[in-house]
Length: 236
Image 1 (cartoon, rainbow, N blue to C red):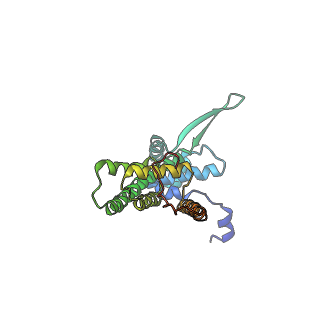
Image 2: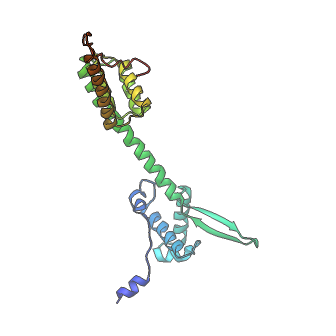
Image 3: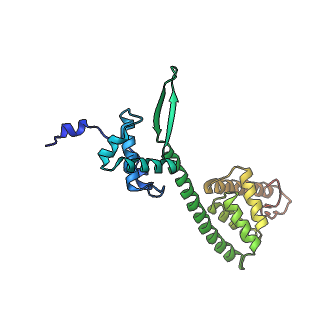
């Protein structure tokens, strides 16, 4: 009967859960996965080029089946056979198992890119609706493209675009060119978050209020009207 001490002394094979999660997406069969794990087991024991005959016995397959599985892993660029030569000119063979990591990395990047594209499309549709509601009319194809470019190329956050839209509406400027000027102005000031923009707006309002008080304290002068902020001014 197997006791716990013997069980623990046998050691363990460590492999990332990403391998178990994505091996099917990489085109690996269940048998190829087991063979890969056997190679990992031997590598972690310091055996870089294990005897495939022994592995075939452990897995219960014919040697030719193991060779076929191994070739499949090589063809899929999951592993590769490498040969190194030492200073004495002796050659040593080993299995390089890092190809799987590169495959998983590319798979995750592709998945992330797809998720990002779907997210941008969803955000674009939401923004289109907000703009059409504020403008009181359907957006033109050029306007739709401009909003899409703000998200995809300029990588403005949707909430930042909404703030710029609100600023334009307050100034009664229903123009994407005007909104683009606002976004560029915030970008020049390195304002990248909603909190930073609101703080800057409050600072600007305080400055205008201070100017108004100074004008009020000067005798013999009528109180001037405080102008709306001109975002079309390149210095804004």
